[in-house]
Length: 332
Image (cartoon, rainbow, N blue to C red; front, side, top):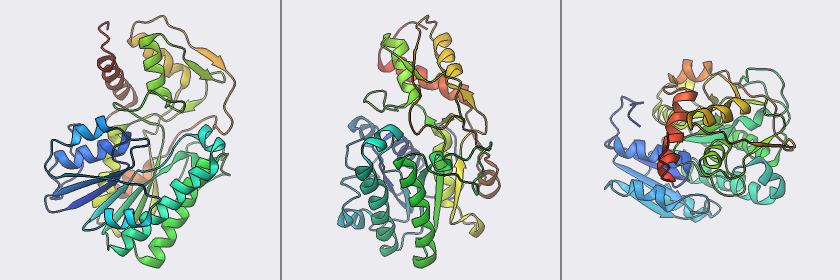
């Protein structure tokens, strides 16, 4: 990741990245470390995070790792000590999993989030940014998605993220915390987990094509998503944490490209790039999934200076190349 997303000197600033052993969190931590932050502390319980991601960060002397769970209030208080800025990425994801395990999702995504907000307030943290989700738009049919226009949540996961936004608003008003939320739209990229029952679609597709193991497309494959390379999620987290514009604070922002592609297009692009004839199998649509997704990103552009630096196809090629190396695939 070579782009620079900030101009402020961060050499005297300390950062906490929760979920920093995970996909997005590890990319944020790597950016901060490589750009000379005084201290970057990662809090992760390693349930969804990976030691391999931490290993990439350990070469920096300013890196600290704290193993712990955000469901524990004392852990959150300790993690926030002597911290200026927080990027809260710790959560459990997956719509279908949340339908099976709603209580667990509430405990982590809502209970853990409130623990982190209170710990940040108690430690006088300067600014706190957090991961929300495009799932909060629910059954709102109009495209593109605009921050102020929400529908009904379609899954427990979506409900937890919508609840986080409500709590953030309350903590901004009652405790004076500076908070910014980011509604991620299908973030993807290198280091995303292709394994497990609830893996994201892009690493699943790439791994399946490379290893010729079954790949499933839900529904007819014509559902669309605003696929967003992870570099853009890193950018908005940095911009949000360091923003000094009062009008930018205590808002939620779409984090996306502002363009959408079908799942069929995604699969066929991967096939073509890998020069493969491998075919996917189609199955029933998933409960809780939305049909189409496309973001309006003008609010983030206008208030935070967000400007996507890597488009969908550039990010997809980079991701394919990462997994080719991971699985030691030698063909194009």
